[in-house]
Length: 135
Image 1 (cartoon, rainbow, N blue to C red):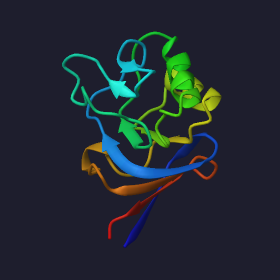
Image 2: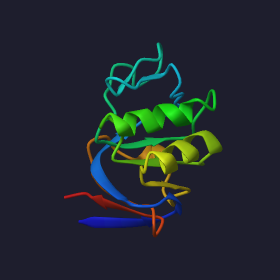
Image 3: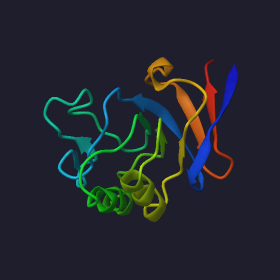
Image 4: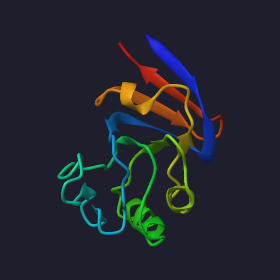
């Protein structure tokens, strides 16, 4: 079964992959290794997980504006998420997604806490839609 949720498109494009959900904000500067795509922030719920090729869902970004460039570096290194879903986009993550050409949406009409890791998801940043394949 395919479920379609509407949101707000932030960064154009379409990306799909397995969902990786964080209940906590993510700091890309010093929280994600741009050479491996692994979350390295001590105490973070996703510490040790690789974000490459996933649809990364998290509430919002935190930390320095340099985080935008870490997202760009992840993209250049082939280690970026396939797409990003935020509860509420903020400038650091939005800018990084745009310059890294990572499709991104926010404000989808389902709480992030209800999303399940591993679900196959397609994000359409052009239309502000997220499609969940629940089969």
